[in-house]
Figure 1 (cartoon, rainbow, N blue to C red):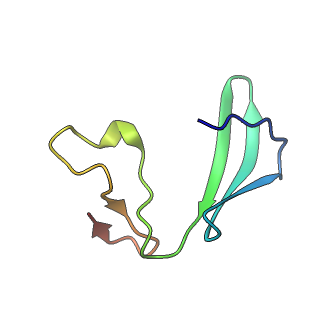
Figure 2 (cartoon, rainbow, N blue to C red):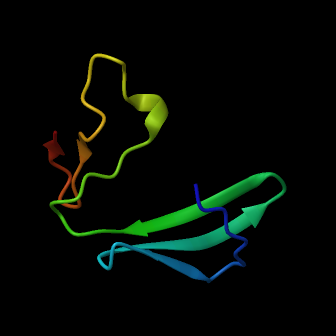
Length: 66
């Protein structure tokens, strides 16, 4: 696992097509923005149950994939 320190407004590029931006920090909460192509699923891990595929999620156009 890669662990980084970032400030508000700084970005991390993942795989050349996904951009993660630090939007805000309030106490122990960090708000991030994720910009990804429509074919890349982006999801919160706690919303995925053990019976669902780990690579599923919601695409940039709001459609479910997986």
